[in-house]
Image 1 (cartoon, rainbow, N blue to C red):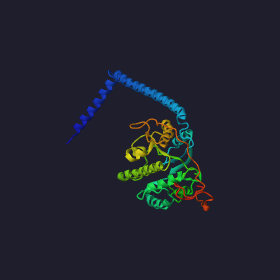
Image 2: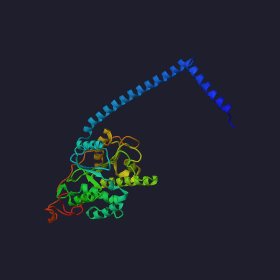
Image 3: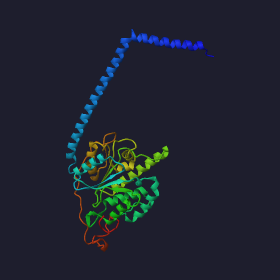
Image 4: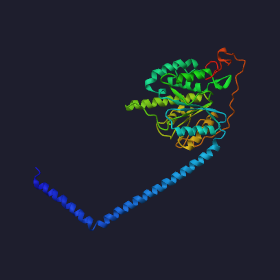
Amino acid sequence: MIDFRYHLVSLISVFLALAVGIALGAGPLKETIGDTLTGQVDQLRAEKDALRTDLDTQASELAASNAYIAAAGAELVDGTLSDRRVAVVSLGAVDGDALTAVESQLTDAGATVSAHVTLDEAWTSTDLRTFRQALSGSILSYLDPQPADDASVDTSLAEALVQGLTGADPAQPDRLSSAAGTLLELLTSGDSPLVTFGEEITAPADAVVLVAPTVAPDAVATDATADADELQAVLDAQIALARVAQSRSEGAVVVDGPATEGTLVAAIRADEDAAAAVTTVSGADAIAGQVSVPLALNARIGGTNGHYGYGEDLTTLPTTTTLPPVDRTPASTGDVVDPGTDGTVDGAAGDGGEAGAEG
């Protein structure tokens, strides 16, 4: 058993050590300790000032580089998408400034943004899977070409959106076909619309740009396995849309933020078939990536698929080509006239066999 004398000796030892420390600190070691601490503080202050100076210098150099790229970008993109109509589709909550900058580069390239589309949560929500299944069956009669018999719901809905955005009235190529207008209406109707449009869409698009959020989509499940499955389901739906956009338009480009794991571009590049079919641009949250978007779309319309950005296996700058003019020649007036559509023609491929009318 520990007795009183043990506690007494322990207390005396503590006080003796404290007294020795005070004596040494106030006497022989006073200046040494003070000088050491002062020197360390001065060194840390100098290092902080140096780091601040380096940071300011790098920020200034980055701003100068971005200004140069922005100025040079206008020359690079000029005329690369002349007279093309481009539908811009946001795949969720996209940074507004980055989206505006991408659209600005497209217009600088000579394109017209024919549609501003945002995929709503209902596009991938697990709670609305049955609703999407039923809707995909309702839209099949308006699709031409039809998806394969074994096509997924994601693919069928992607066909509906892309054909809705690109379907032209053959008699009036500057207007949407009636089938295209119906498809867009179906996707935006009901209590759980799958997409939202920034404004009324009246003209069909020639090409499509898909803009992904700059971070990986957040999963809503709490279980780790379910969380991964939810994220993969979102990515699969987005990849299906990208592949359909490429096959049903002159060309499509997927635009993403930094090239990091878990993003849409990373998922596309990891899928051999998707990587061979879909063009991507990483780093579109910065001016260099934004300038690359119209250049990449030009290359894709011209027949070159690529993955652009800064990083391993990425091409820094797309190689552009001179694109042929867009052909918007109306269909022959010898086609059968549908009296129910105010004199427009009926039955052209690509508009689901529906009569042309206002979208």
